[in-house]
Picture (cartoon, rainbow, N blue to C red):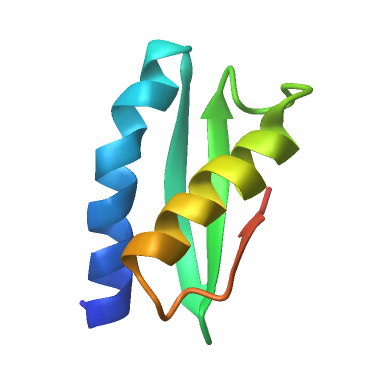
Length: 76
């Protein structure tokens, strides 16, 4: 596995319990040139706060722990 992808997966596993506690989850789809593509699942999918969770929560967290990450985007 690509080392950056592994770092991202490890970081996501740290925040996954908080998302699951609210009935949601996040799935790593791909990492391309520093852009992390994730799929929001469960209660997170379609939630009005999903954009805020994605950018202010997940993206901020990943950028702190994986400096190679430049952006996080949700994919269908």
